Length: 440
Image (cartoon, rainbow, N blue to C red; front, side):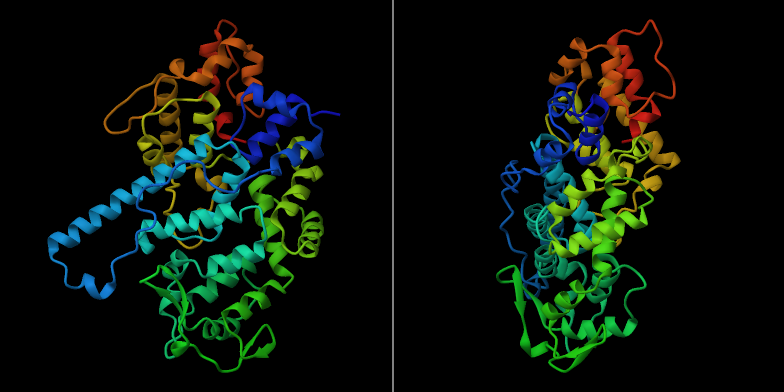
């Protein structure tokens, strides 16, 4: 039996950025298993948007920078600022135009899981490389993703792994590996962190190649004890030992549950999904398939209970109405204003999400953004969006009934009911500005 309109809408809203009536009706031809299979069938895990020209540039060697003049140093910082903006604009373009929204949603999920920031890393090319890595493994093996991200240049710099030496072990990466990336609080000891930090000594960033390099001169080859196991462990051994812990699967399942289903994970379902995740050797696509087919995912009480992130709100609106734009300055600026500045999460814990997306300030900014979108106001440097009436995708607004427009835009009835005399354009403006539009 095929999906209903509301079910198909819910699926596209939760796993992507929403859908037009045409896209929703396409999924109505599938039953739940086939619809989920369709979402997970992605031929390539590469961005289609051409990247900036500087992505292969290497940072200047630290020993050379100390001889720079003030003018050279200022020019360098200006260059980094421009490249950082170009990087954010590049990802927004990919988010808006991708044919595989789930892939970008998962890339965004991992970006908020394995956090790194331009503010700390400073070199945009390294953040671009990390983004490519996250997308490549977004639906693949979590084991492979973890092993790859641990040696990623941006991560090496962000958590100071490149300064971790036998003489002075740096615990940053080991601590965040356990607390935020794999186990969660309470499932490791301070001694585990200290011993693991010793295992990661010698992990180095080669500035000549921009790649990971093991520096054995600074590696502690002594015996360590982690999770009750003893051995002459190195960093790769610690990653393997960590993945043997049962808490990893539970931690990730809970986090994905909150991303796609509700803020209150079901303990029994989490345990079942975690067991399956471990049996399937941490294959993310297999876990997502089970998650999207879980009864809780489709339950009416779980629809419209999650708040759209700033990126979801911005990108979803652009995609839904196929709004043309000359550049993405508006998206970048409003993403920052709404509290989700891509490539610059607030700290190592990332964006907390949920109800914390909404404050007095951000709610006002969200409303202003949507007003600009539907009215085509342009002020100052926040340009790039045109009036909804000029939107290519607004063709469906002229073809569909007001009832279909409401069912497309909102997960349930608006707070302020539509007025009987509203035409379709007025109705859509009303619905987009309704608080329910902020939900998914």
